[in-house]
Amino acid sequence: MNLPYTVVLVDLDGTVMDSAPGITRTLAVALEELGLPVPPPSRLLEFVGPPILDGLRDVAGIEGAEARQVLDRYRARYRVTGAFEAEPYPGVREALEALGRTAPLAIATSKPESVAVRILEHFGFAPLFTVIAGASDDETRSEKADVITRALELLVERGVDVSRPVMIGDRVHDVAGAAAHGIPAILASWGYGAPEEAAGTVAIAASPGELPALVAAGAPDHP
Image (cartoon, rainbow, N blue to C red; front, side, top):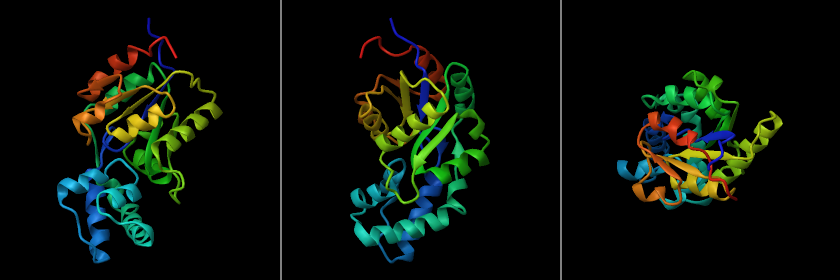
């Protein structure tokens, strides 16, 4: 017998929002302005989801002070225009509304928290979430496990029962971040992840409409 989840943590990029156009465009501009090579479109998509500094290191081989320069250029444009070059996935609002009728919802994103709030407010999604947790502006908190820690702390402050959370996300970073807390994860396969990133998840959702039933199935009744 499974127990109902008490709270649902939700990733933003690739799960709620198709934000790739704004992220990849903004990054390409930042790299061009600094005279750095721009990865091909297929590789730029790898930046969607994980922290930008991780992507610069892993995809573009850029680290240290140079990576910080790129990040500063990226943020300057992204906060003004890139953040809103996005669209909610079809059916995701209805799925979130249905989920919210069964358990509180929280955003847990590696995007800076201040930007995530602006995006969700812009698209009218903010009221669906009890808390919105993201990376700190200085990137000292950017790994998904750390963001989940913040989300859980904010939820506890709001009096939410966090004893049986579930994480919904589209990338291996979401799955690994949840696993670091012993939290089961559901993969949003409409996002930016590859099929192998579903390893370790408790379920795979092919569309947002499948989420309410998967979450309703509950958590396994064991540690």
